[in-house]
Image (cartoon, rainbow, N blue to C red; front, top):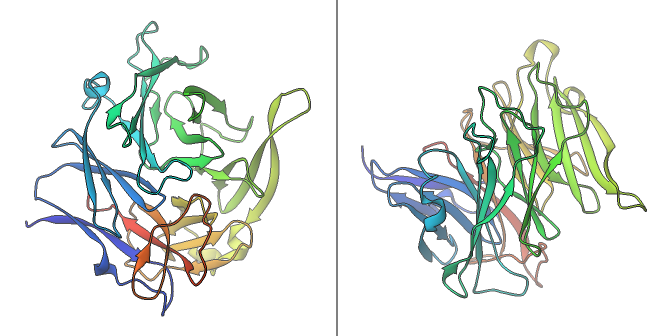
Length: 335
């Protein structure tokens, strides 16, 4: 086998369609790498062979290789490491990388969540941030893990990941407070029995949201806080996907959530019948993505671009004059 690469699947139509070969990241055969997400025009990859973090700007082709923090090196081969990349507000040149692990090794005294933040401005990792796992997390045959198939979602000043295993919940890292917390999912919604798909989303109008799909019925939940500071979940919307999608009753198959584009509020899904498609959560607009009908993991890459050259997007998707909002899908199925 020759070198492998991460490549993009364009989602826009001509003339805004970006050729798939425009952006590609090459790896040598035998390299082990794990794409973990993209944000603000950057792609974040953990290169397991080199024990490095790779931050890649597909537009400028800039690559930044960063050694993993010593405090997390011992976890690399033992448990799943997840993370995220983002640019600080108003910073076009500098970025931050957040690494996150749930260290659930069946030892009640050592079960904890760990995080570490890298700043390209200082060129160093910060101190390891830790928090004990919630006391109600059981010790079972399935360890608690940050979901490897769902990337982080940035809501306000916090990053959010899905947790699964001995507990289904939402892991929150507050970038300002540098603190870790676990947010429970809506009570009674996530069952340990039956097949379902779930992901963190941005709620309509802002704030933390949660989307669960069971048998082609999607529920969109919103996290709200009352006047006493008590947070709870509120059902925002129920979406009957079987009426929205071009499916006959005999064509129904399990539906997978394979990605979420936070700036455009778009969820990417896949079924063996339709293939890859997207749904805008506010307008409920459906769009089929022309791509081979294969189940894979896709990382939405959101940016803005003009006719001949691409320009990295801003924090909240603001578009400068004469530019169109665009997005690509990073196909990670080759990893």
